[in-house]
Image (tube, rainbow, N blue to C red; front, side, top):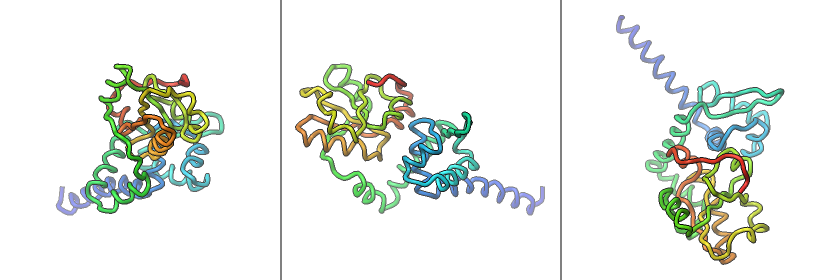
Length: 225
């Protein structure tokens, strides 16, 4: 193979890698990946959750599909999207962590979004130990559809926007460990602020359902708790 041919082949290879990078070069597309990491969804559901109109959401999803990051299935007239594999979820997690470690703007943006709830954070191992010892209950504050798609075994489901009205369903004297989608999910932070404001002992898992799944820990599906 001539030097010119080798250079051309190398350029094609790196352009193929770059196509993946281009597909990820959109905050909204990353948000769609974050949502799909919780489970399969229709285009309509994704558009609503991401605050996009249907046309824009469809265009972003097509870009992700062309890059091979998402897959689809058809059910009647509805198109359901899902991540193409756990490796896509791992790439998404790694991208966030590497960017936070090396871009000065990320920690400030994270704090502006998540705020300070003053909560104690626990690891996945600590959560399991507290539950096994009967010292805590686990509260999933994601939307019900995400809970049904997969949740920490034994977790109760109260979406954060229903928590103020349903707080009486939680035990008063037991510690509550709250979790949501992942490390950068604001729902758990908002829930902890609400619970502690009502005098409950609330702490927070230091990441969320995405990282729990990727750690190959047990996951239950269905059955509202």
